[in-house]
Structure formats: structure tokens, C-alpha cells
Amino acid sequence: MKEQIVKILAEKVPSLTEAEITELIEIPPNPEMGDYAFPCFRLAKTLRKAPPMIAQEIHDSIELPSYIQELRVVGAYLNFFIKKDVFAETLLTQVRADRFGSSDEGEGKTICIDYSSPNVAKNFHVGHLRTTIIGNSLYKIFSKLGYHVERINHLGDWGTQFGKLIVAYKKWGSEDAVKEKGIEELMRLYVLFHQEADKDPALEDEARFWFAEMERGNEEALNIWQWFVEISLEEFKRTYKLLGMEFDHYMGESFYRDKTDDVVKRITDAGLLSESEGAKIVDLSEYDMAPCLILKNDGSSIYATRDLAAIFYRKENYHFEKCLYVTGQEQRLHFQQVFKVVELMGNEWAKDSLVHIPYGLVSLGGEKLSSRDGNVIFAEDILLEAISKIKEIIEQKNPELEDKDAVAKHVGVGAVIFNDLYNQRIKDVSFRWEHLLNFDGETGPYVQYTYARCSSILRKIDDFDASAAVDISFLTDEASLGLLKELSRFPAVVKDAANRYEPSVVARFAVAVAQAFNHYYTVNRINVEDAAERNARVLLVDITRKVLRDAMDLLGITCVEQM
Ligand code: ARG
Image (cartoon, rainbow, N blue to C red; front, side, top):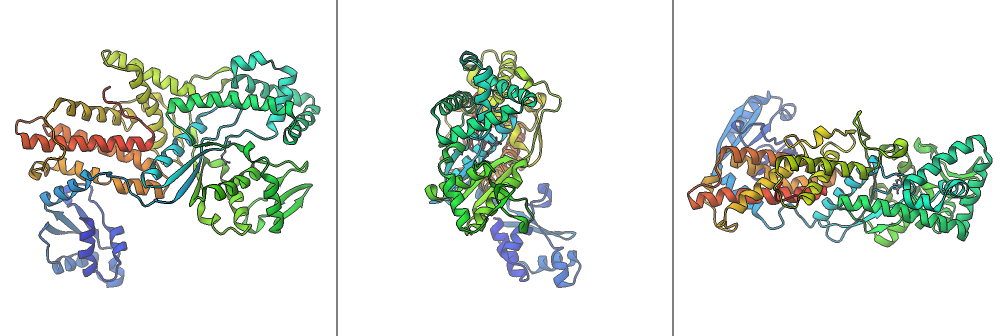
């Protein structure tokens, strides 16, 4: 519909391209002002006339096609009123299509997403929860557009901190304590190391020695390290399981330890490596950036070196179109430096292909969140708490519900996911139980509840036929048309979310659809006598249900049939 209006306008307004017109066209905030509006302000300069006058002139020059009911000038705007039945029919055809929302624009292209990537022997905290949730949603969104996605978990499993842990473990740890308490115990040892090293700096040398041993392949050191990795992974995987999220590769920093020499050689060959206070760096002052450290003065590689190795490895093995990195914004400079080094090595593709996707902080805003010893918060505990709080609500409100545990899990975990994705990723998110578990707000449970309502309506109607012809006159009222308009945005929403790497676009869409549906449901009876009318009304319920399910799936949330 919009395209046709653009075509009409393009004929009358030669100074703007079709793309520019498309960009300018607005959807008025309320349908009494028409279905589409074209503002004439932009034209005032070229035409040297007042915008309302321009609107009037265009208005007078247009011969109305049959699907337009009325064209009205309101101030500087030209408002188009589409004939309701034509409009409803067009929208219904769109939203009824197979694979509605999907596309194959990504066919044959690969996207690598590097996300989650917690650090071995450290807690999987709320920041890691955010990268996991955003990264997983981007995976879903790009897959929906036909891309092949490689989900990569770049675990922090290598580096000097493991030298420290080995020292601490050998001096003060025990196998039993690590077996029993896992990451918590490893964190305790790590903190202890720093306390002791303040008193006795020789410990730092010992730690450096053990990390150097790891890099040299010392079996004893590697065995301890390997054990710590396994223990940590086991805990991380519990969190992934709760979230219902998976990876194609666990390729942590250690995977690149035998690949960093080659990177250093390539950087040297490109004439980029220089020395600074014994360390090896790439000077980036020309680009207003601090130098990128490549090798420390003892010759050991660092985080950036392993990231460089990872980029070449992925490019050579996955031939990615893009490689996305989802981390907190505090790593912005790190990625700018690393990407610049790749580009300076003669790789033009680095400019468009390597993308850092930063996100804001999670603030706990004085909330009481359960924490373990040492006051650290584990994402796992938050998820478990969300599940148990939802379970309590179910016990109160709907104790007869089947499968209470499964429902509590999907709604509880979904509430946390939704809360993380509802606002633009760069904004800080605050964590408030009373908000995110609210069934009436702009929340996961609200959308879930709407979905379950759709399912429940459908369960009650046994003669519904999704493919039957529809008498469109039953769907031209303001609420039905409003819902159809909202639903029809889905394909554009998915594309927009992908272009901006912004799952919040989908989360907001889900809420908008749920609201439009609840309005539709309030003003229209669904289960009416007349079979044709009933079928038309139920059809919208059925389509809404599918779109809500697909949108929630793009966020990584599983909808429940009853709650
Ligand atoms: N392990 C890092 C952290 O917890 C994140 C790693 C992000 N990915 C990367 N390729 N550097 O902060």
C-alpha cells in the first residue's frame, strides 16, 4: 500500500526520489488522521512556497485511484485514507503468507557471532547474561533472514591469571574444596592470591613462572588448568541450559595459543610491529588511539594477540561476511585497536566486516539479589530466583495448572530475557523484580499471557479453518485494522533489528502486537454465532498467536500454551 502511495507522490514531486519519499511518509498517531501522511516541509525550500500551499497543490493534482477513500490536506500534511476493505484485504494477505517475517536475503552468507564468553574460574555475572541474551537473539534474527550463523563462545580460558590460580591452589587449595564448591572456591583462591601477593611480591614472579610453564606445555600446569576449565564449563553450561541457549563452538582464548606466533610474524612482515619499553606494540597514534599491545616484555601474548589470531582463524575457516562481537561498552577501545591492526595489515574487509556491538551496564538498583559467599552474583541464581517467584505466583493464582514447573521456567527465564532486551542495548538496564515479573507492564510475562490467551481461545473453537476464504467486512473495524497494521510490520521489524543489531526492536514490536491484540479482544467478540464472522475473528487470533510466538522466539523466549 505504502509503495503505491510512494509511486503516486513520486510522479507529482519530481524533486524527491522514491526512497526519499518512502523515508518521509509517516503513519499518523491516530487513524482519524488517515493511514499514511506525507509532510511537505522538506519541499518548501526547493519550491519556495509555504508547506500547506504545497500540500494543497499536490492534493489538487492527484487523481485518486480506486483504493483511496479520501485525500485530505491538514496543515502541511497530505493525509491518505485507504478504503478500509482494500486495506484490510491487502494486510491480511501479507500476514497470512507462509514464512511471514522470514526472508532469504542472507542466503549463502555467514555471520560469526562472538558472545557470552565468560571467564574460567570467575562467576558468570549479569554482564555475561546480557551478552549471552543479546548474542543469542542476534543469532535468531540473522537466521530468520536466511544467514548461516556460527555461534562462538570465546571463553576467557588463558592468560596470566591462571598462573596465579595455580600458585594459590598449590599453596592453599585442596582437591575436595574445588570439587565441592567449584567456581566459588576458585574465586576464593584468586582473591587470596592477591591479598597474599600484596604482602609478598615474590608470589607474582611465581605466578608468571607458572603461566610461562603453561605456555611451554608443562603437563602438571596444564592438567590443573584443564581441570579448572572443565569445572567452570560445567557451571556455565548449567546457566546455558536454563536459558535454553547453545553454541556451535566453544573456542576460548587457549584455542589460539599456538596461533599467536604466526600473527606476530604477519604483523612484523607488514612492518607494523615496534618496540616500546621492552614490549611489542602496534603504534596507532595516527588514528588517535593508544598503541595496541601485542607481546609483553616477557614475550607472552595477551588478550588482543589472541583476538587477532581468532579473526584470521574465523575468516579462513568460516569465510564470514561479518563477525560480530557482543561485549560491554568498556571494551570499545580494545576492539577499535584490534580491528584497526587487522585493517593496517592490508585487509580492507576489516572495515565493514568486523563489528563491535556494545551494551550498557546492568544496574541492580538496590535490589536484593541472592549472592553467594563473597557477595558475588551469579546469573544462575537470578534465573533460579525468577523461576521460583513465578512458581509462587502460579501457586497463588492458578494452582490447577498443568506442568507448573515447565511454565514457571519459561515465564521466569523469559521475564529476565525480555527485561534485558526491551530497551536499546546501549542503555543501562535496571533489574527490578516487581517490574520484570509484572503481568501488565511492557514485560515478558505480559506478552506470554497474551500468547496464552490466544491459545486458549483457539482451543475452544473446533471448527476453525485457517485457510478458509474471509469476508473482509468483518475485519474493517478500527481494532481489527489496527491489529492487522501492527502485525504487518513484522518483516520490516526483523530487518530493522538486524540492520541495527538491535533486538529491542523486536521486543517492542511484541508488546505493540500484544497491546493491539488485547484491544481487539476487548472490543470484538470472537466466539460469535455467525460462522463466517467467527472464522474471520479467530483467524486474527491465530495469526497473532503465530507472530507473537515467532517474535518471542527471536528473543530466545519460549511461549507457553497456558499460564
Ligand atoms: N572474556 C571476556 C570478558 O568476560 C569477553 C570476550 C569477548 N570476546 C572477544 N573475542 N574478546 O570480558
